[in-house]
Image (cartoon, rainbow, N blue to C red):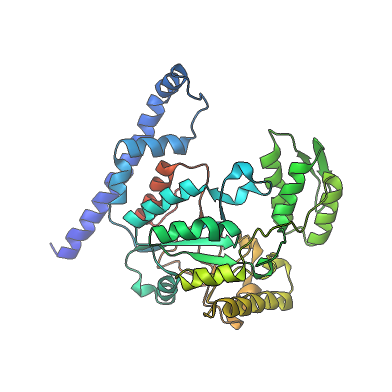
Length: 387
């Protein structure tokens, strides 16, 4: 038997063993959950049930299954992990949905990535995307959208402490200003509203309940309606939302929520990559071709002037499939971008690599380190996303 055949057989058996172990973990988890809950209640811990994926992830870690998967052979792929904010959600008066980790969580996650994965730079990923035949191993890329100030204050020093590089996609119209984004304006108004519920009529009727038990979901529902393709007039949406909500939108505050150009330049000099996230952070597919071209060109020119480095990567605002189009891709190519990142999940494999639709996985703040380890170890081993 050839050496290649032996290697292939070993790889298949390793994957089969890991998949069988994960299935065993699910079965055991279902059997022991009632006993675990009884013990938790008996010693005074919260009786709130863990989610299925939390149970599986924690049991997998406890049984050593995750450890095995982390050391299993990995398929050629690029796993792009995306964050927005890293801060304390409890003190946030704006959109908590874009807070993907606390500083402590982020530090723990970066420690795992540094120890167990090949964390790539943007330049390395661009080279692999442009020549997929060179993609022979699993690579991880760490990215951040929007350019919030905590990216400079919290994320940057943590990455440096672990010797890691990140890619920061900045909406240039917010750099060094006191502006508040549309999603943060909406969330903040809803947190200040005195109305128990209100009705939105554009682009379709949506009744919103804003009591404490409903607020976070209500914010998500309104934001999803804003980005809905049917919302073609976003200015009208915000006007009618403000009237229905009963709390004024606040477009500017006393101190900046976003990093300054000087801070972005400091990060670039330290080896962090800076990419564009448009200028206004409007959804590209809702803009005319001329407006999209201007968004691409302005953001690229501003960032190259800020960092004195070429700007080669773009991340679509919101990044769901309906928020960009072939017209957007034409504009990106025409203005000199080499790659672009979406944000609707998925792993980038050699046979599915698309230069202007590189897939990314969001991090969930509700996941513990066990979930993080299992999720990304399975992704690297199978080149598939499990959740």
